[in-house]
Amino acid sequence: MPIITYMGMQGGQWIKGVRRFGIPGIACTFATAKGIHEKKMKWKLYILAILSFVLAMGYGESSIYMKVFKKDWLVRIMYGLTLSIPFLIIDWKVGLASTILLPGAWSLRLGKFKIYKDFDFLWDDFVRYTTLGCIIAFILR
Image 1 (cartoon, helix red, strand yellow):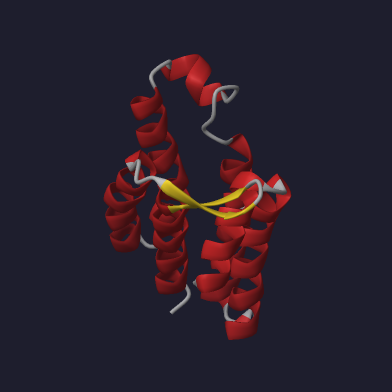
Image 2 (cartoon, rainbow, N blue to C red):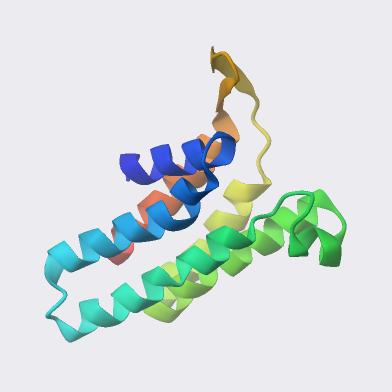
């Protein structure tokens, strides 16, 4: 979970690929370590890989979400709901919880503080990616 939080926060200000491909990569690595030979885990692995597509879509000014929904608050809710779809497929109970937690986490605006030069600690990113990490960890239990 801390690795996913770190990757999500870094991907927002530094290298986008860290977030887009690193988070699903770490999730798939842990799923593999847990037991890829198990049929149930192998299926989860493929679904977790789908997170790359959702995380690559983004939710910023130039995203497809902004072009469709126009309002930032609605974009963030819809992005959170889209991000919960793979979890709904894997486990409907966890997925149902994620349809509440992820849109809520993506809707937050909590402020920031300077870490070093151009890098800030964004509290909203911390909450977003910690929430995502918790859901992934729960799926892989």
